[in-house]
Every structure is written in C-alpha cells, then in structure tokens.
Image (tube, protein in one colour):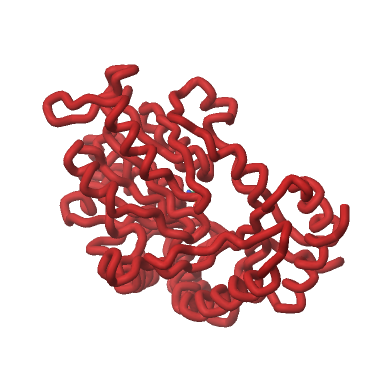
Length: 386
Ligand SMILES: Cc1ncc(COP(=O)(O)O)c(C=O)c1O
C-alpha cells in the first residue's frame, strides 16, 4: 500500500506500549489508577493550571465548562463561526443558543467586533449582559485558539469580567502554546479565562486515543466538575445521585497513553517549529501563496500549518484534489458554523471575513515526523499549473 502523508498522525514508541501493558497487568484499566494521577500532575506542571480534570474528550470538556459557568437553558453564548463544530454543539447540549462572531485573518475571533457587538447590541440588567435583539442573557464566550495560535485574549478578560460573562478557552488545538512574558506572564493558553478545554484526539499534538482535560482555577469548581463527570455519585455504596451526572472521566489506559505522549511533547514542539519554518522558507516570496504566521505575543505549538491562497488564480479545490491524488491529506479550514444546517437560524454578527477564509485557507500536513523531502513534494504539487 502506498504511504499516505496525513494531516497529523500520532507518533508512538516503546513507552506507550509499556505504560498500557502496566495498566493491563495491574488490572487498573478504567477511571482510577496511577496514570490518571500522573497525567494530571504532568499537565498541571506544564500548563501551570491550579486544577486539571482529565475527561473523555475535548467536547465533554467544553460541555462541563459550560455547566460550571452556569450557562442555563435559553442563555446565549458567543462563539467564533470558524471553529470545529464541537465548540458550538456543546452550547446546545446545555440548552443555550450560539451567537456567531467573525474571525480575523489570523483565524482567531475578532476582538474588535466583540467590542462593537457589546456596545451596539447589548444592555446591562442587574450587572448581567443581555442581548437587545432577544432580551436573553449572554452568559459566556468561547474563545478558540485556532491551529495552535493563541487568541488576543487580554482585552476580552477585563470586558467580560465587568459584564459577568464567563470566558471559556477552547484550547483543544493549543497544548504547548504559551503567551509571551510581556503579554501574559508566560501563561499557557487555557489558563487565563475561567476554564480551559484541551483535546487529546488522535490528530492533536498529543493523543490519548480520545481524551481531553479541563483546566480549572478553583478547588470548588474542580470538585464540582469531578463529581459531575463521575455520574454525580453522592454515595457509591448506596448509589445515591442527587444530580444528573455524566460518564466523562478519562480511563487509566487512555491516561497511560496520554502520559507517555506528554513526556515527548517538548520534542514534538521542536520538530513542529522546524516544519513551520521549512514551509515558510519554501513559500517565501511566492506570488500565489503565503503561510499563516503566528503573532509575536505568544509561542505557537504550530499544530497545523495553514497555506493562504493570495489571489483568484489558484483554486482551493484543485490544490486539495491534486494533493489527495498523490496520497497527501489536505483540507480547507472548517466550513463556517453559521452556515451549517443546524445553526443557520441563530444570530450572527457582522460576519464578513469567515467565508473568504474558508475559501482560501488550506491545512497542510504537519505531523512531527514530516520530512523536508515530503514538504518539498507538497510544495511542488501545490505549485502545479492546474
Ligand atoms: C477547536 C476544537 N474544539 C473542540 C474539539 C473537540 O475535541 P474532541 O474531538 O476531543 O472532542 C476539537 C477537536 O477535535 C477542536 O479542534
């Protein structure tokens, strides 16, 4: 079979096998065990989060964060239209409705438009922010650190605090992305807002074969989150459940895999930085294309590299199809969520850039073991005439 160059494939070696074997030998395979604690500890020291709650995936991390933020039925939550649909679905899981916001060329939520929206479209009642159009309370905003690039979160934190809007950071793609000292004291993405949500899905910078974690600031919220993720067990012997809980805790086997991966993160980050600079070098001064580059107020994890088509001469569909014909995976940025069937009916605010972005941005293969040879092949195919 011909080798496929994937967008992002997992890299395993001896440690993953050893740790999973240890779980099996010990019998501790489900939600309790050494590796759950090891993973928590390592994530805590890496991110500087006060509390870490491992969960079954990034989507459940978002769901529980919305519950902990007290987002209730009928409330509204602001979310960028350009994100993976999980960020939006989680809003509906708690019975709230999304308000779609625009995205800037750097693929992160438009802070300028958020401020405009607040000024033009909302009013305060008893200290809470309400939407003029629906009179509903806006109780949270989900800020997504897209492709490993950090959002310009600082101006939002102050405004949202004043308006009693909880900030949930969707850091599913940004493990290892850290703000600069000057911008936010070297803080890890996901530790600035009220909650940070990580994903360890198979295509992320580290994987636990499905998994995620919530970064939490207070012990009270951590304990509540832990309780809710464990079926809201008030008494496990007499099976008392005083609330509706969820079966969201990460297993020891998955934690073992995640822990082994996390130990290699530094190495992955190093390789991915190199891959990004190789792409930048290849596309430097190219009249048709450029690479999406990070800002200097953070250090990116370079999760996925994004190619930008600069003019109408090159067609996104042709490029993707040419790459796919050569067994190279590539895809556009997500379709804007306000255009997805379940979400067309919801409010959107001045969305002017999102669609153009979807039509001109392409995610390129970015696995940590991608070779320069392979990058040159990708470059050549992208530059083909058709
Ligand atoms: C931005 C974003 N949010 C949320 C998720 C959901 O994470 P998971 O697939 O682990 O549920 C993902 C990735 O899959 C993502 O890329």
